[in-house]
Image (tube, rainbow, N blue to C red):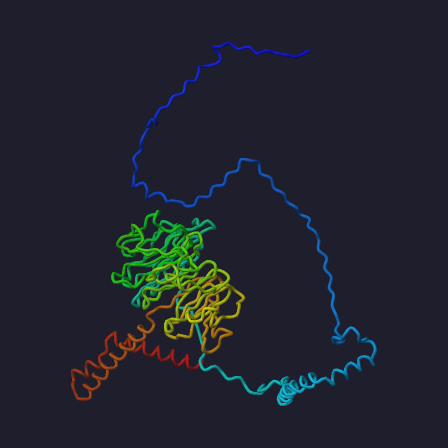
Length: 530
């Protein structure tokens, strides 16, 4: 018996009959493009957006298979013997020895080795290598004794501790220096105030000026042509220009769509006719050149992707993130960058092909390069800092470093060459220690090490006007001595007016005499301690 059920439905419930036809597109609405709004957005290429529409499962295994290890060894009491010789039979071994000794190759081999062995035996008998020679002699005292002392401490007035991200001296022997502070988390979000400070050397109580960046300031540099203008790089990828005389707000700031795609690590001015050009490097692996007169777009840019041949094309996806940059004004078209993966890349702006633009590549460190600086006297040599060591490289030797320090106990954070003593460099460590290395005296240990503070030391920079300051001081003293001799000569000639003026001292003369006496006392004290 078939089981059948019939569904019934009225024709009116079937719906209307579809009638299809061809018809053109119909414009519902049209929105015109707004170019000013484009400056508020940045094109992301490529865009990675994960999508998961299925339930997620995870598996975790705690117990692992235990591996069992055994230690075994072998005792070689006898040499190698042929298989037909019984090692345990003394007569068999003795017959084999006599057989080998009668062979001509054995005689020639022994005669050729005997001369070398005789030389080493006579050399060993001539010198007792287990004796400590010259132990009775007293150690010679050093020719000069190094010393270091703290002159001033410039404290940040922020309510929360902030790390020093950049340090720059005012050019032409200026008495001011700029400091950029930043306290950020893993995502570069600020955790403290963003202001940077311009300090006066003679006033450690309060900063001379305050800069107010819109984002954490990671790089800051004075203009070598204009001591009142500074350029800085932000964590947002933008670069800006400040004039500390006009207040804290930036004078000009590049737009977000032309800025870097990562935080700006370094900013340096280049040698140009206008004195208004600088370039910046960021973790996105791109170096961009800017002109302060027009910050609408960079004048030039270069991707830090070292290609194997001139036919290969550079790609931003393979670019090495920039951690530090170096520029020498006497070589205006060349520069160097240190990367986040331990490379030192040399660049040339006059290069036509990618291989000519980046002709130098060195494997300097295993981690990021924290400092990179050329020697002021020997420009082919430069120092790098990374992975607990300080290394000195030469452009002529690309295989390895010329000199390097032993791995230190505490991480090295920065280093700089001395502008007056070309073999001296200062290295900072994260335990608050300042080490002075004199490469001409010794390379295995620093010539002077001082614990400056318990906090980590992060930035160091020499003042470029050391020699100018001493020369100016000597010229002032020479002028004053000439005036004193002239007055004494006039007094000897019997000039009453000159003698009266020489006896009658002004307040400035008394200050000069007191300063000279204090200087002589300090020199005498330093000579007594040496």
